[in-house]
Image (cartoon, rainbow, N blue to C red):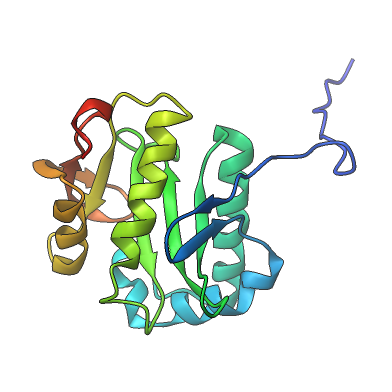
Length: 185
């Protein structure tokens, strides 16, 4: 007898990705319409700290990974949209692929959206979701030592450097520990 894997029927298998709303942003589910903006981001030098630059094909695969993470973990990263323009500004949320040290809050902003506080605003909303809805007792953010802008975001969120770790795909990163639910201001 041969064992076969049961693959869910796409018509009946569904994942629910909640939308989050902040003062200036909407965090929404990633979708096929995001392929062009993700291709542009992953083709640029802005993606150097998160595995890029990547080819167009690998950017598409990254989008599939982002959506798949929601299906496998029940949480993931959202596309961040500016309310005022409807433009995609970044990819922010909760991340814990196999091999990760523990659940992370991560942020990637697209070209032209840095310096506006969007990463901090969106990451705070993601952290509130992790603590309030998912019941996480703690969270980390992984920051490349050369990524000073990302380190500043972590610090604005109240996270503090804890130690460094080696990740197979990313090399040395600093673990920033976020305050627990009781310590979030």
